[in-house]
Image (cartoon, rainbow, N blue to C red; front, side):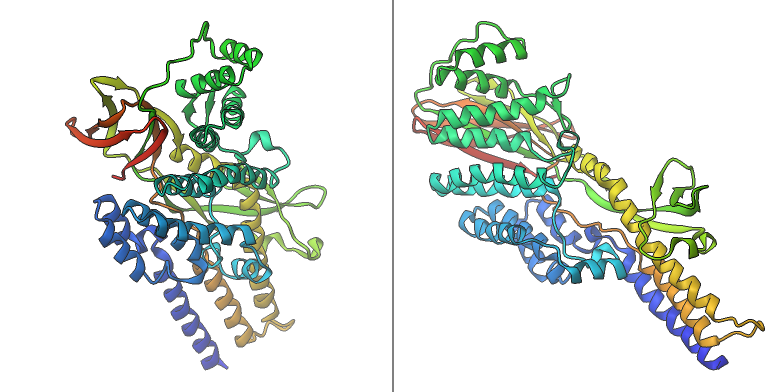
Length: 476
């Protein structure tokens, strides 16, 4: 029996060491060659790295693979292929990513073993890239379909929350894009509705900000302009007052139309793991709660068993592996757009960094409670087995004791935060609406790098009299 106990302990140690070594590396660490090539602008090499990476090829990471393939295909100028991948990702999200088996795996092991379901802002960004791809393929009809799907995405997001005003369930930038797409199709009525809806998200806050972004002046002008074009004089006057504008005059349309230039700068934040420690306590009413070492967090214990039989001593300390975002400082600190010696300011429209940090914060309490309950159940099981190993005479059942230690080691070393995210998204997106001349236009995008030097990118656009789109990525 002693040899059996020794064998169980040795086997548990080996399994634990394997779990520990495989669990130390974050998702970013294990797919780093791909991201390094993306950052260096080596998109073909990046795609090769992506296709040979065994981690992202796993079925549980299928959504991440499709989003990354869609992104890298667009960076390579392969817009049709890009949308094939994004459409597959979209289809996965539409059909649902949750199942009883998937939930069970997460409960028994850790969230990294579950299917990646995507961050809420990542789902909106799929529509952004799909719409641009359709416009580049001169498929305005499908781009408009994508514009409508932005509203459906917002509805799906909003249905998850009871209090929608305090949670990220819509996206101001996506609504701005929606308005631009409608406008490109000469649908100024729906364009106005989209711009208005975007503006109202900003106006809900006294400082007119939305997740780290100040309301762009361009959006304010778009709301008033499209209101006037629709003959909505009352609405135009109301928004002039709300924006602090007066006597807005409709601009004369440019002969060559306009270009909306999106500048995607930097890379999205990286998810890492932090360890937090909690204890299980019982209040005077007999209710069970988790509390952290500082006492700043108090969370209920969701337990379906007999709470009166729970020994809080068995759950004196729980280590929670929790995801944490770490921002990546962009290589370029600013940019200026010039066309025909006229400088056009770029305005920030979407702050992925801020969205990542704040949406994780919003769901922390709810998800932390689930994680703690899962860990506590494991801890209670371990304690029960170890307690059963000793009989009333003080004798020890080595088999049960060994199993108890095995459960303890497995629980400790299998705990791992979900550090996956779509990391080739930019840190933030800025935009400018550029008037075009008829015929060829040479637009200069001058970037200021981290050394203070300027780098200029020249973009040639043929002014056709219509609204056109262009996105430039500096993913460093």
